[in-house]
Image 1 (cartoon, rainbow, N blue to C red):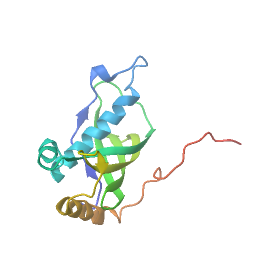
Image 2 (image 1 turned 30 degrees about the vertical axis):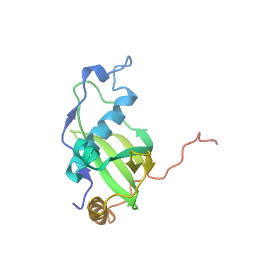
Image 3 (image 1 turned 180 degrees about the vertical axis):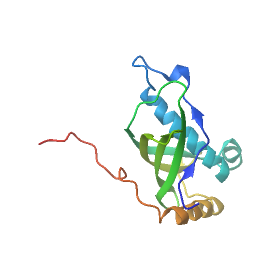
Amino acid sequence: MSKPFISSIMPVRPEWIDYNGHLNMAYYHVLLDNGVDELWRDFGFGPDYIKASGCTTYSAEFHIYYRREVHEGDRLRASFQIIDHNDKSIHFAQQLTHEDGWVSAEGEGIVLHIDQSGPRVAPFPSDKLAQIAALYEQHKSLPRPEFVGKTMGIKRK
């Protein structure tokens, strides 16, 4: 995979539209998260993993950049690109792309592997870490998205 992971198409639901007539900001997060869930299933992170291991993943931080409005019925895909990782966490970038090809939102986050008995941050099992490392090897040669690592603040003249 010499490109970011790309989810299947996800439609914008009517109940996600706010009083401004476009997708409410919270549902950009839902769409990006649902897109990651597809990759997590490929990695074996899901309800069965939680039951068998007592571990799961948690979002530690997420920054989103809204680029273009989407509306009811629009159809979107979420990407996922590993920027970096270690034995307990993954730094990643995402884009939410309309089926017509334009980018609606971009996000950057950190996900942690969690032992729920604490809960506490814990190392990924070796087989999961190997999957993450293999995907990182494919992603590390990709261009780093321009929005990754930007700080937030009011621009002053």
